[in-house]
Image (tube, rainbow, N blue to C red):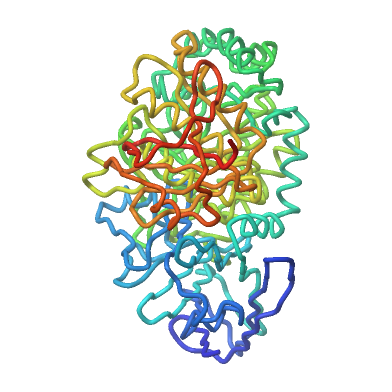
Length: 622
């Protein structure tokens, strides 16, 4: 195997081994082990492994002759980064926006511009054969501290692995591990392999969630209400209180028996970075949390602990805590119009800054008694800057903060991570957002025109949720963002609402709404409840087909499959096309459809049209 280790773009003598650690039926797991030695201390600017051919990694049962890469699935760095399965003939998309917007989807540990013929992914990257084969090969990192980036060149067939140790001081013998090579015969075993790798951390999350009876026994999901996608920053105390009773009634109609979450989102605070309640919430927060809990909910609240605005008190009074570049200029971490523009973050190398943040977070749990925290914009902690304490790099201090946070909050506080680095979240956040923000309309037109992959839209949220399905119930409880049941203040069609609700349910573990609960469309809620009941004990696995935004979604027992069309075009199908797409396709399949309060099997007719933003379930059972 031709391999080279580069430290600060200079080759260093190294030893690279691939060690088999697990061989099960249809699953092979290996670990990449790297060793090298430095005579003199050196501060890392870049550290990477270069492999001449990715097929040097691939097991003899997956050799180049037998395993031809047809598609590449990229994970993306954080919740809002694009996750997508690209056909090998396609190119990974690039966008050119100002840095404060690119911050929402890119990191300082990956190239912001993807070169021709390359695919770039953080956390993991999967390779697939041509449909209907499901054989796949995945590279995945379990490093809890330093972000890992994979760069595959489809023309050269080369692979570069970048280890995110920027800013670390290395000397003596260095060992790198926690990179795994996973070979699977199908999508089912791929998910089983992920579950095996993250078993210890996931089981710890389950135990924590069960302490509050958050997981519904019949559906294995968490349910709740949160304020953002209806009220946004205009949320008031009255808006929250008026939804408590009708939301309880809605849950009863859906036969939900677990303890649901009731979460106040952004809009309760004076401003971001200044975490006192504003005049729209006149009742002390502790009394609000108590009222929520007395009505049978787990009280939750939103916070962006690492974000602050220029007009916040902490920015003015402790400017020395603000993360800056080498010229002493504060570094923007993003731009939120609802907040007034650019926001900034803390230098996490400063002990007093971290202590201040921890005290602000603890106030919500210890003083105000909230037990569920949605912590947002966490990626800001991984923005590189000129740290006051230069003993380590940014990733080290981010990890230090997360460990201190979890320790300070204790085991009884449930954390939802959002806008969070996916690879680095699994040790800390039992529930993790796995997609872009959704929206009460299918697309955000201006964002689509700009090619902005982190745009809030139902389409982008669904795309990410589907392409990160392998993480759900293996790495963490996936939060696909909210579904929709309401009649007003919404531009989605009824069919789009049902689609979003169904596939969030299939590929997510936290099911929430933001609707005004006096505005629920009972026709939609009854259909959705029927689908939930039908789908609750079934496992599905998605795979992109050749057409963009067209997916085949198969049930584990191969009795049911679904065609999902997220594209802007109606598509024609017949049985011959389905035979080419679907392994073990049965000519005698029927449609599954909702009629008069139940899911019915009806005779298959061909050819048929799958409309844009629509789905069709089919079954091999008559």
